[in-house]
Length: 114
Length: 112
Image (cartoon, rainbow over the protein chains, first blue to last red):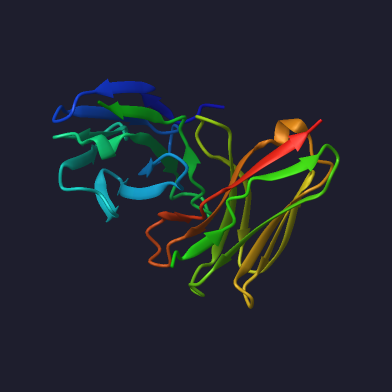
């Protein structure tokens, strides 16, 4: 079965640079979530989109922005990168058509800021 | 204090042992409870999904939810070395926006 696809899998950036992470949800899933997981930490919710509209916002810095496109893929844009932004970034998708709204996670993008 | 508390371990058991993993939570409004398994440098993989109180069994895995005690458990029977991973409990945000609130994760090692 098709899973959530994230690209790139690994990304190395310098401080103050910009990064763009992409997420392709499971086909027919209409909701996308972004999470940030620091080393040894649990995933922290950043932002979510339903039907291309932002549905919720968590502890996402103002330097970050995201959107969901007409084909339901989503991009997380990160500017003025800081060392503390180094983490695993996960995208998850779900379908509002199901009773459970179960979230399925992608493999993650490992961002390293030098 | 975190909304969801989970002992990070590590927990080391011999192959074949029964493993018990637990989480406590503070918000009585949580209704959906999940267990995810995460291998090193991989994304969380959904193991079990439970709505409200009760038990749910799937193969070697059993999830229990006790809402009166705000306590959830995951039991793994006949544990295998391939079960070695970090296990994260997660709960839905009561605001019904779908976002998940995770426990810190328990690292499990099953020794052959």
